[in-house]
Length: 144
Image (tube, rainbow, N blue to C red; front, side, top):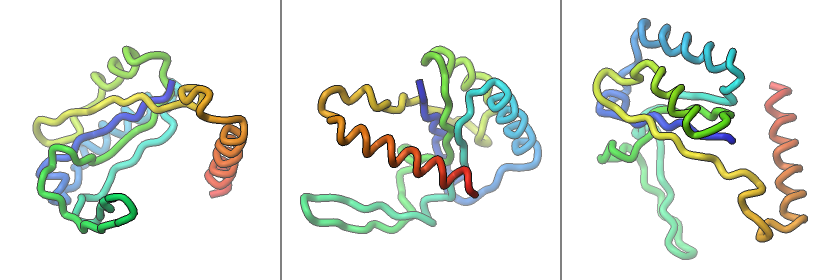
């Protein structure tokens, strides 16, 4: 199963404080372990919300809300996508992760929907479209 590992933002990450060399080294080592174990599919850090925006949907209306966003509790500072055998395996790996922030933080683990999770609502035509889009995305990723 695939999971997304969400690294929660804090005051420092929202202020644009960059990790020091020691943390970058520790995270690089951890990422190496993930790759060697065949788990890591992707992983990136995110700029602070001051460099982002939200789009609020209300029926047919769209409202753009520029960052920064005041409440850091729901903000994400980075993510990984891993291929794991179980939630327990993902938890075990997260527990080995260096603390990505200077102080207290949380890392959230969320399962990613797979095509088969949608059942009969995902018609054969929609499945074919999904397969085609995934193949196109993979081809673009491999050409860069």
